[in-house]
Image (tube, rainbow, N blue to C red; front, side, top):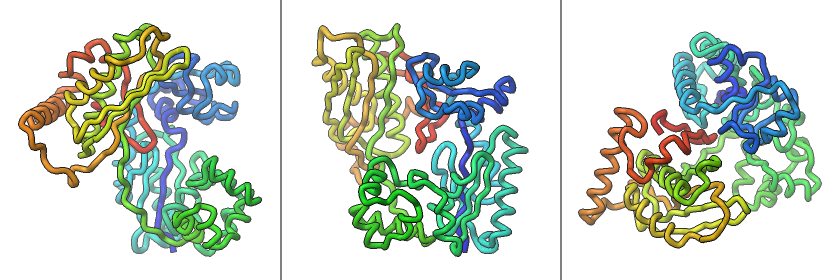
Length: 402
């Protein structure tokens, strides 16, 4: 019996640009984080993909593959706006169970929705609603299956604008046309592990026993993989966030120590805001600087339990005093907050100074949410306000005022 409907927006960032900018429609385009030949494509339209351009292709190489390629700087705030419109459109047809990423969502089928004809009808209705209410250039692939995992797999079986149903009685034969790398959870290292056992096709993989899966995956995760490929439902464990971080490649004009300091401070501010929205506390902070000669400086600061910006900036300032000297110019900077604990697992701050700093942090957050990004900010990021703009990771959908 069918239980899941998965929706995957096709070439999402590029499709958003084609929807918003008519002159880009039907053209090969690549979306990039900045206009520079040294960066890489974070999205490519289907017209560009025909030339072999994909996510991760360097801009210089992409231009060689397709001289007519149009390079477009990413506009994350627009993609978030359209993402929210897509959610609203889907909700007009059926409830969204989980928003998986900026371009993916999952809906649980209930009652008569689980009948194949009704599930297909729902999928077509969702596609039409997105077409009518959000835009005709925002195509999606919909997968329907006996569990969430296989419905996601189904979205990759027909792109763009696909609609694929996998029913339990069709398993495992319907999966035989896929490559092993098409299966979520089979990355490069797992693929090498399978190949060492002379497993190179989906038919060979599906013929393995439950014990074989456990041995290959070297954990009970292998048993779960075996079950979902058989069409069984597996309860997903609750996710626990392990880190929050940001990085930024410095433009040539900012490849100085002072500018690098300001940009890192901006990254700390962004990460601290995210931490507070997620209701987490951080125990450690890592700071990383990569120089244009390849040298790296990576240091760690203990934060105790912290989620206020001022304490993090103070910890960073102490680290910065011991940075390497007489090196080349800073090229890329980054920070990561780790050892995270959820609010429910942490006692309230005991010291008055800590309480006041946290109160100030929340006041600054509320002002910026109400009046707009950087309406109020810390003085040390004065010269980097326009740097490190909002980026969209696949599993993180930022607020527009990030």
